Image 1 (tube, rainbow, N blue to C red):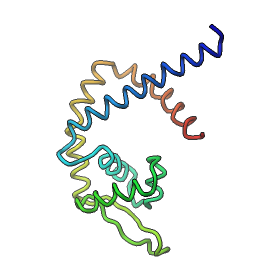
Image 2: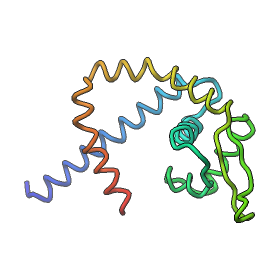
Image 3: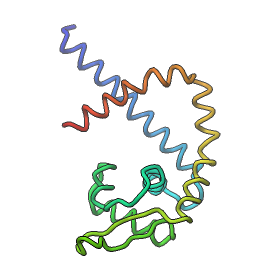
Length: 148
């Protein structure tokens, strides 16, 4: 086996594990999130809660690597649920600004409580030290993929 073949096999094994883990996490999250909350909803609420302040829909789309249309759809559902407020940008009326509402913070906190047992079980089973060791590698992989 050549070095190129070995690297290709390594890449296939790595991405296979990442994609399978992603699918399994999404399935588990989908089962424990509060009724009616989708992973995309939780992700946006969690981001807004952690980031503080307002964001433009285009910024959120870029952050989550989705189209503006997909983000508009998610934001529309969150707004109808009362989880976010969308207002015009006072500096540029063509733009909008998005902020999490008190109901959105409560929904996000409720979702975190629902997720916590699953996370605790996973961390306990794998070990916090192993997870801390792999995080820098996953972060570097994400950053390199983001460049391309």
